[in-house]
Image (spheres, rainbow, N blue to C red):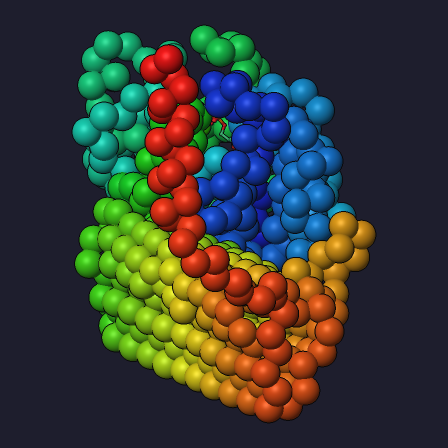
Length: 478
Ligand code: UD1
Ligand code: CA
């Protein structure tokens, strides 16, 4: 049934539902799992399977949904009132014609069922395009089929549909069937639209069911191929917050299994989160509680300690991140060591072999090759030269209450413990600042800056205190 002139496969993704049981203010399909909105997963699967055009039927929060997927070449169809899945698909008829899709295979997917793979979309399309078929649908055998539609196969052919019955309309006997409708179909246009036009909403939910149109084709003797999903988990849809958690786990697990297959060690997959857009090089080890999100890229042979949290960060090879570090928008070159308990904020850059220790915060700053900030420091808007040493408790005072100012620290400089660098300020190459200094003007190359009150020792202080205390006690007794 594929359009022979264009060879096109169109996708229509149904995403107009309100998701009432999520009790959310926003549209259901924008809730994120595994680092992407529900709808994003479905769009990706359709695109990877070569579907073009991809149409999305939206209703509740339609504007918000469109905005979230702007500039992705999608076609948008409005379903003003949510009168059922069949009604939703029917809204796409004109848009398909407008896009030049008159006689083709239409993949109908569900915006709230993100576990679907491109492979499944491909299988459905091929089964529907087989010469004996009218269409195809995906089903799965589930232990707990819950509220999903039940699939009854033709008695003579277990791989062909007889009828789909919605849980709300099913008899007690039908509810015992474990084979469910996953909600993914490959159907022919214009055939499906002709059948949809004949439906009414005479069922328990008062809706126009897409499932009734597919059942009608089967009843008329058309072959609707039943495709059993390789992984029944693909049938999982999101109707509740509990579903959201379950689906998130499935998608994260899928990502982690792909990483392990490619040579990454994940010591405790159940306690590790890796989002879809993350890349990790081989022989890298992820300890329990690691979370990698956004566009994070990790090189080869890195170690990420327990509880390391990284978002949109890049690590080159052989980087060690000790436990409980937070890296957000940071770039770390090879052989660096970070943490434990370090925080690298956006635009933090560590060059090769740099070291950042515990309770060090860095923002919009670069640490040169082999530079060290071992303990309790804040570096903001700073450039630190190669092999420089930042002592414990050093602070770049980069903010004067109105503006941010830069600090420059030269190669091999030694910034003594508890130095306050009042920016804008420069510490030259090989310069030293004395511990506890407040540095308010530039320090030249090789100079020592001492900016603190001179120490004074008062002899006999303890004895004098003791005499005074004794006198006080005497007065009290009297
Ligand atoms: C549907 C199927 C059921 C199947 C299940 C799989 C029907 C009648 N039932 O049930 O057999 O087991 O999916 O998950 O099709 N939508 C719209 N407009 C509407 C109604 C729904 O766009 O008017 C969208 C929803 O946003 C959702 C999808 O269609 O993305 C499925 O709708 P939903 O109401 O969740 O159908 P189910 O009751 O789950
Ligand atoms: Ca659903």
